[in-house]
Length: 423
Image (cartoon, rainbow, N blue to C red; front, side, top):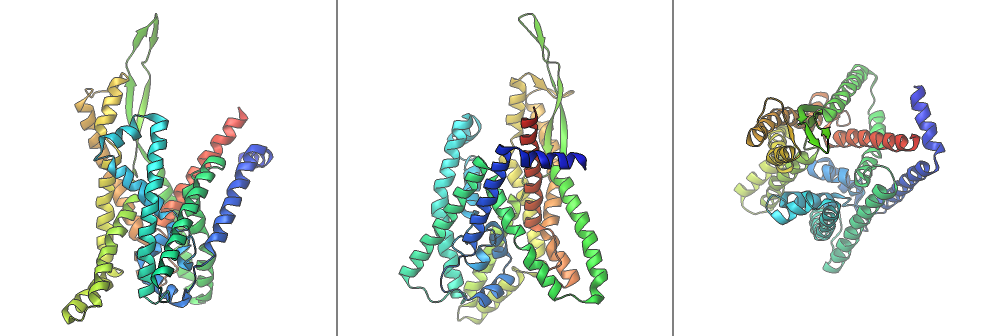
């Protein structure tokens, strides 16, 4: 406890660190002001009902920092930028030039790679903004938009998304932590008062045992997510001894950390993106005059937006996409090659292909555990809501993973800043 208060006093007393903290607070204040400015012609009652019945828009609302739930000028949030970054990472599998730029050209290559992600954000934001505005207009959330009004609104929400991307990068440069993650974190945290007020309104003294059980379950779940987020599988590594200039180098033993949750929240985003298509197809078929098409459309809309079929598909897709994304971002052969070039080896394993095979086997086992964990956390809110019958008594999903990851990363960054200033 004394160490905590010492670090807190040191953060406040240090002018540079205090300036970084104040910059983050100011940037978040600007973000929240922008998130409260709605675009014209919004029917808030219809918007609230539409959001309650759509899991995918709930995810987009998380990445927009709750700006989508009010149809604000920053309704797209940093979602297009995140999508652009994911697409660029996937393109490294198909383009050797992009792969070399990201992995081999150092800091300059990464800056160019990031610039391409920024440029890709513009068309993605325009497409996503157009699709959402048209969808909301057809659902009666927005009034009838003529082509000029639609064009202007698309430009507004695209500019809002780019504005948040710029704020996020400023936070990363002049503040503490990853700016994009902090913006998402702030949007999630801003929803807590609303959820708490809804819980208080529906409070019933007979439900006290239920609330106590939920509190205990929430503490256990959060502790489990923290443990799994930080969990690593260490692979022992030894550097061979070498003599240079009469001095001996190497002989040091260390380890290669393989994270249990290598993919983060990306598989959840992929899974929900795939599950959006049955909902869109169902909405299209429901509007046709054919009774059979209407029946199929209603079935797809009902079962792929909620219920057990949706939960099972959601779990399976998150599980599979965890393996897919880990295979994209982690290359055992490249790791084995780098170890061999640096004179390192895994004790008891031959360098080269055998090392790559050994790392791949360990990675498969750890990824299996991580995939089960991620899929379980993803569907946890749906399970808790089905058992409790209360929409507000749910914890888990993307929001919990993001909050835990951002808080842990922020603590590490602040400790690093304090350690640098102490020494």
